[in-house]
Every structure is written in C-alpha cells, then in structure tokens.
Length: 222
Image (cartoon, rainbow, N blue to C red; front, side, top):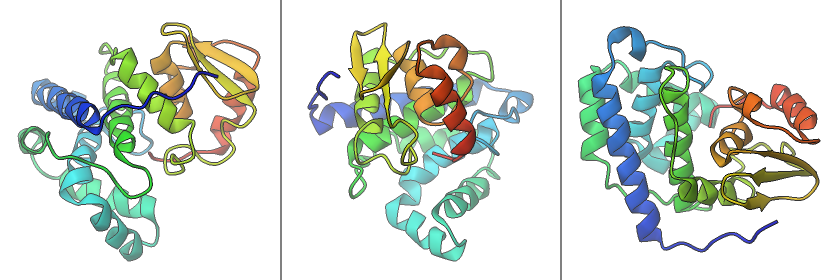
C-alpha cells in the first residue's frame, strides 16, 4: 500500500472548481432526453445529479443536517433537496454550478477531499451512462482514493465494503489497502469503491468476486 499524498487545500479547491465548471458546460450542452437519462447514482437522472452538485454548496453541510431531521435520514434529506433543485431549468442549474464553482467545501470530519470525491464521482455518474468520455485527472482520482480508503469516508463507502481488499491502479502505480487484489484504472476503482458497478468490467484480480458481491449488499447514494 502506498502512502497518501498530503495536498494543499488550495489545490483541491481549485480542482473542484474546475470540475464544477466542466460539468456546468456539459449540462448546458445536453438535450432533454440526455438530461432525463438515468445516471449511475441510483434513483437520479442526469439533471438531478447536477442539481445535487449545486445543493452541496447552496444548501451546505448544515442544510443537509436539517433536511436529514425533516426527512428522517441523511440520504432522504439529500435526495429531497436535489429533487427540489432539479425542478429548475437545466440552464439555471448549470449557471448556479458555474457561479458557485469557487465555493470552498470542507465539511467537518470529512474535509476538502470529500468535496473533490463527490464532484469526480458524480461526473462519472453523468458521463458514463451518456456514453461520454470519463477521464478525470489520475492525480485527482488518486487523492479521492486516499480519501475513500481512509477513515473519513463513511458517507461514501459503507463500513466493510473494502475490508480485506487491496485496490491497485495499473495506470498510476498506486495501491490502497491490504488483502485480495483488485486492479484496473484508478477511475474505475474510484467509481466501484463508491458502489457503482458500471466499471466492473474494467477491473480484474482475485479480490474482484468479493468486491462484486459486496456491492449488491451496500446500495447507497454518495
């Protein structure tokens, strides 16, 4: 297992802003059929995923907590906030995402890498089902995997999903965790760690059957 890289917050915030702007431009380019396409984030179409990315900074950490109380659960609260924002025109959602791109997100406990991971994974949730290229910067994906395999990612990776598994990125020569190996592109490892099975065909290794079985037992929205 390679050691996590310590990265300045300013670098992470700039990367998040760049990803938000890219997704805003993408949303502006999609037609109604594409916006209504089911994303990789269970229960959300492409437009709702984009609306959630706005909600992340517009409603914020404490807005999520209030919604969690109101809707009897954090995931239900996040879902309600995203669906409400998704009622706006796509152009307004894209505009809000671009205007708020520089918002610096660093929630208690999870820190700035949670925001980076959120926007990278949701970028895949949008692009992959649309058949669009999903090629995030491997350096950023490695930072997200540092986060996802650490102790602060409970809202992203349910406890036990990656236990006894070593993730090895064969495109950037990095690995995370100990146990039966699963290897492939870093972006595929990131998406799979977050519960998406669309990239399983890009992975291999003795730990893959175990990881595949665990995905069916941990269905979540992150």
